Image 1 (tube, rainbow, N blue to C red):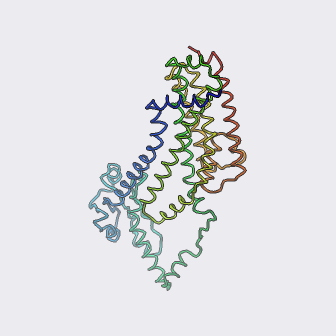
Image 2: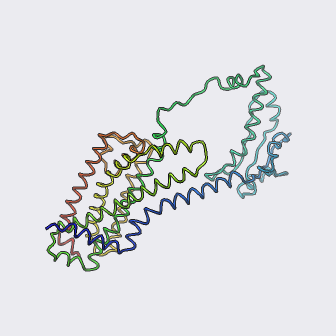
Image 3: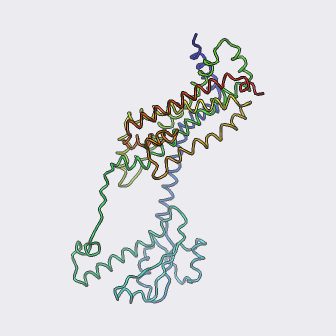
Length: 406
């Protein structure tokens, strides 16, 4: 009599009673990504707006007539122009955040411009922050002045029509004509993110059920009872195995749904010229794409289940199993991180590397450029490893020195 369904139901009942398992299998993948998106997006937006709107403290220093340059920063809604700033103390003031930027005007700059030379005006600022807009905001008035002076010089040379002026300044212009679609461009940028999420959650979602159904059984002294029952050991390990794999699949699917929903929601709340293009990219990912990714998750979860359950049943206690299982997570991260590196592409060689192949294939699916033959190769190779993992796990489960190490 096949007892596998009975064992599966029994083990599912066991793990659903454990709050920690439910949290990592259901709550974490469902809520962590929306909260993460909301937190990062909200904080980044507020910081960017604050940096853009704050009044910058600027000093114009140098020798000679500084009135023209000082006049560029007369807008009190954007700049606070500091007077009588000691040139020797400027760098210290900037580092102490008493001053945001200093415009250093060279000596005789007016004469140099009158003679037709190009003048470099250094802008001193810290520039350590990633969202630092100081240089862009302080240099903007100088760029506008430079454009006016360029037009004036061209007018003095007899070139008055604006298009002709532009042609004199830029006789040749390289026009970008990319053959890649918007889905390919955004898929290359965002496609590595989704595999990173669902692979990690597939693993994390399976860790705690594996620990509970292996080492946890030993700790509760219920494993002996199961072994004394008329249930075949192969059926016993397959029942536990299916539950662990199912936990990983559920966690992965929930993470994909929550991540996708979060991305769609925040794109709708964004502003800017590329919002429609980004929305079009998200809309181009259809149900079939998610089905293809889901099919890759199944053998991947099977591999994780075999490895985690084998390690768990080897451990003497739940705590020891966690000690063994946590380092495995870093091993899983390595190929996933490698898939995000520039130049790392899916090929028939990388299609045979576990985890890396699934991550790269998922990115190609999101881009809409997956090669069907490579996809089949990845699915089959991952499935073969999963089957070998099941065989190893069943053999491992039948060894007395593994089951009764203590």
